[in-house]
Length: 487
Image (tube, rainbow, N blue to C red):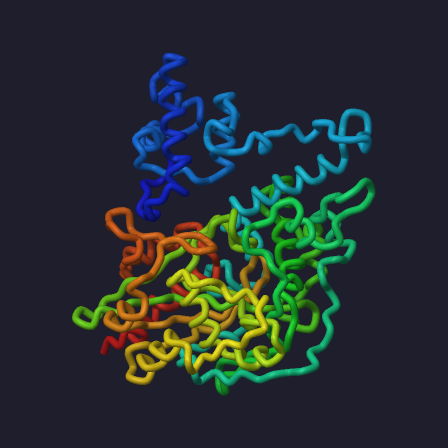
């Protein structure tokens, strides 16, 4: 039986379209077929109370797979639920002279790939757990689906400014790129007898999200955040990361479909080829930065935080799950060589993400050659002024790897006193280019965030959430007194 919903989404026609259509379709189906709600629930393999909430608009259904399943079980067109009928096109439907008998092998291969990718996005949390079970306990972060070496995770939050960033002009080449024979099962056919060369090529042509650009990125080469906090970087490209990360996640989804509860390394040849996930010379490790944004009430000492739902139609990674906001790749803001160093700052990257994801400013997608003048950028100047007087306090909790994709994330927390937060982000938006903000069901505005309380944190950790976000929330709660200045 589905759990009682406790998280809410912002009101928008973008989300309400399917809800209104689905509720109306279900009511009409019952009237036409003269069945009651209990009969319909049994037909759909759902709880009656859940069907009731859908019909009355109290429960939103935005998952495409679930909507497709309902359309199939009721034998209705997906178009009646606001979806394309192409989503249910038989994979064996003839298309051209490439047919072998009655089957087009290219179409079959590509549709199978799409279905597996949808299954991947629907089950990332469960797949991450199964992937985590493959690794030794000493690199697991507690019981989370997150991996880290001891030197990657400080014993307590450290001020962001305490981390020294070092640069390498000549990073070593990698030996695994995602184009090896072991990746064959994750690469569908693009023509008879010819597969897509890389996973990102398949995504671009078969399942492109709105945000999908191969931008210059900072490649992690070394990290030690214990005695003398430092991180070393060079340059790489964003797709260098995805070609392997999403491919091994796809491989895991394939293996999970045909295996029992326990997976064997023999079913995961590409992941096995990687071997040590912390070997930075074996593959590209290109980190993102994810931030827990805490709004601290100066009178009570309590806090709220922002939660984000990542829309699978808009993003290529960590899709269909909850994450913290802001979160983004550690990348230069433009293609100019000057900005590879001008933007070489965790904090500057984070402020750009605040601008884009919370204020809705245009994304600096790297296509421009005009450098960003941070010192004369009003938002940056304002936020720096609040930092100087202690009303904005950024910390790092370490670096780790998601067990499913083996992608790296720099874990950060920024504590804003309520007056500084409201001054900086009073015009924050509910929707952005990657998804939308999420609030508590009983609250009227998702922009207010969720309460940073024991109960809320415990409930959130049971939700489908990106593993870096889970690690940040868990560790931040453990160190809440230090972060919030409680004595």
